[in-house]
Length: 127
Image 1: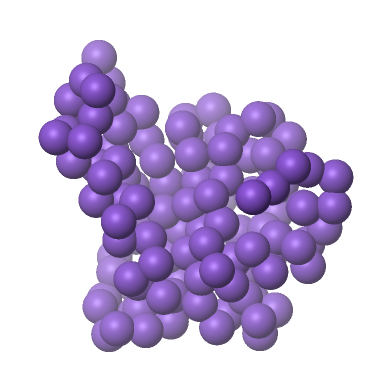
Image 2: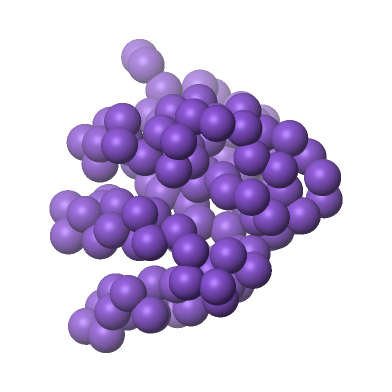
């Protein structure tokens, strides 16, 4: 069986520590009921490398325009100053498609404000 992909959105100055426990748990077979069910893939606005707040250079696996909700088990949006600066609009639109298709979106910290500014939390249950 091919693993389901969980997509982590990456962008310049993302708060790299925020998604660390989630992605380690999702991608680590020791934390899965059946090993190999999920794997993490990074996605960015483009395939160009990004640099996190902690200075980690990340080469995305794919660009947002290559991502389909049909091929994803979940989209994870970590926080970062970019959300408060009105950036990452492309990711908000992708999140809208995911949510409309009933694919889970996990927004952390500043990414929740990004979803709220995009109107994605107005009529949806959220924690």
